[in-house]
Image 1 (tube, one colour):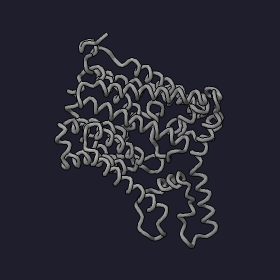
Image 2: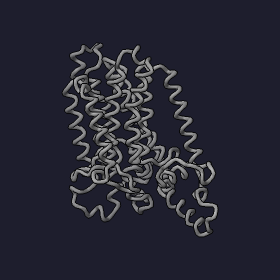
Image 3: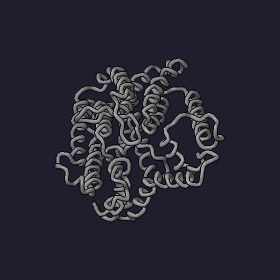
Image 4: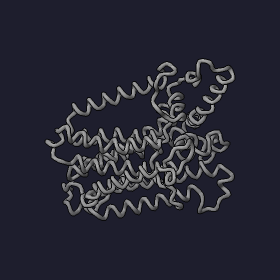
Length: 406
């Protein structure tokens, strides 16, 4: 039966909502499993437990996404440039020592609001999608102009450089495929994009050569030591390669031990995934997590997929991937049914962003991608990531609600 525009305007994409409900249920269950294995965490008051906070982020994200569905996305996107520039200001602010706070390896990525650790880079990804969709929805003949192309690239590279400065390489990198796919779908001439991909590929190659293969004493790109170490682990380059020519045996041994220590998380994540077998060891029965071999500081965020794979095995991993596939394919369907290019570009941008996150994070867990700290959407613990994911999917529902009538 054909749907009129009025009929379609009151219908949500229920299949996507079911997949989201499944992911949020799994996220709650395995954040609980990953954190409650720690005796000290289990002693915290219930309201201070990570899994309770995760539920709170889900509730806030669903509420925000629901509110967005009440207003036509075309009206909302009139404010896209305002949102973009406010996010740019927050990305600049986080770099100021008195405003931005540091965690882990000293990366300055958060603004401490007391009740909430605000991470501007997460919101910057969505702000870029909204601004880029607005910019690229112009007439096709304008997109063929080189000046328009470079203005579009400016929209991309401004948040890219600021996020890279924090440094947050993973969040910066996911902007590249998101922006390129949106440009391709918008109708940007392919010759521009092919040249751009060629330039990026050349720069990436020169980057790897510069970091790992240039003779000692030559100029090298500035980067954090932990970033270089992560790349060295991924490419299988020994730390002793970076030792000075006059290094003592003791110094070389220290570098070898540091290499083993730095590769520990990835090694334990692989063991977790492999030890799950077909059906897993059972919820909260994973020994890697329970005994602390998979470090508890990362088990509930970057390596949540390893916890799921160990406890629910291949079957559980396939279910997670299937749920993400439903979200992504329904997103593509929404893009195909969008009533205008603006809605289509927002949907394509959100789908590409989510796919990039899922691919990189699961790739980190099975060592086909370097560790970059990219969260697994809706499963990894974290307020900013959860809120942005649900707000983005709320916009997707908005586009579906106002899709073409058939």
